[in-house]
Image (tube, rainbow, N blue to C red; front, side, top):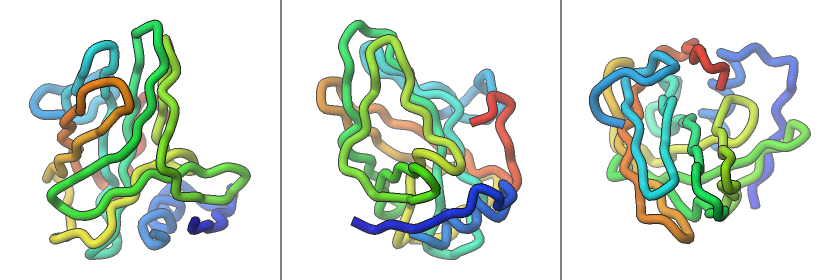
Amino acid sequence: MRRTTVSAAVPLAVLAGALVLSGCSGSSDSDGSDGSDGSSGGLTVSGAYIPQPVSADMAAGFLTISNSGGAKDELTSVTSGDGDVTMHETTGGTMEQVSRLAVPAHGQLVFKSGANHLMFDKLKRKPTQGETVTVELHFAQSDPVVVKMPVKSATYVPKTGH
């Protein structure tokens, strides 16, 4: 497993750049992003976005998966026609690639800067602000969910704080 140390004192814009270097269609949702919610069964996706990357072939992605159902699920993989996508969690300043992340019953799995996040690698093109990157989320129990992730400015901070 790859591990990378990230300082908690690094400003948000620099942290987003460090994450990049280390490895939903239509209407506006509640955090003001351009992506709409994707859903499958009791799972919904909101707040998806990618900060415009500084690298031509790597980027980070953030979103929230909500589970309104009574049973937990797990995010098992993320795929994209735009490049390879891996899931990472950050604990105590250490970033580690993981193969599964829990989506608790009546809870959320949050991907945000400095914590859980998606890493895009070997991108076919550098995503630029105003474009979207399509991903498909795969779960242990639920059907896949397709999400269009808008590319925001490198310093974008969602209103919801994730």
